[in-house]
Length: 187
Image 1 (cartoon, rainbow, N blue to C red):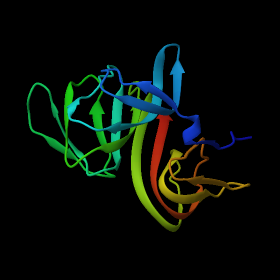
Image 2: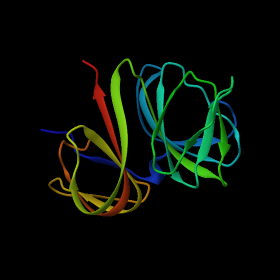
Image 3: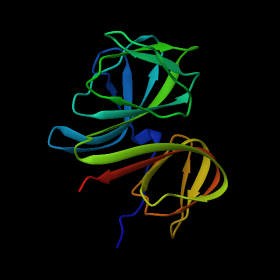
């Protein structure tokens, strides 16, 4: 028997300070072994330019889900790279990164994971009707709109909901901006 889909709503999020003290983040879901994260999904509102928190040993995939975007660069110098809305970017957690907002505050959806233990990917899709999830997509985050996940019985998610433990190859139906997350063990 498979694990039932679990829906995490905003009331279930846990707010905590950033590691660098510059703001707060809302943890949506996470899995730890002891004190170490295997993975963590969180959202943060960034209202000013500044340094990113470091997460040695983890990789971060950041997706701007609200606002115009941000530019990032290594603190040690180098070219600025633009993070545009709904375009996931991968950053190594040990890097000392600084951010510069493009045009006002943004909201990030961040997936942190241990790359020695897990393969991870993040994809964004605009759902307008039906589509199937890929076999490895295990979480569905709804940025806006509504989406039904075609299990039996069906599960519905709305803006800012996360569906965890999504079985392989499920039908998604509705109109929504979705972030599809894959987490798979390295064998």
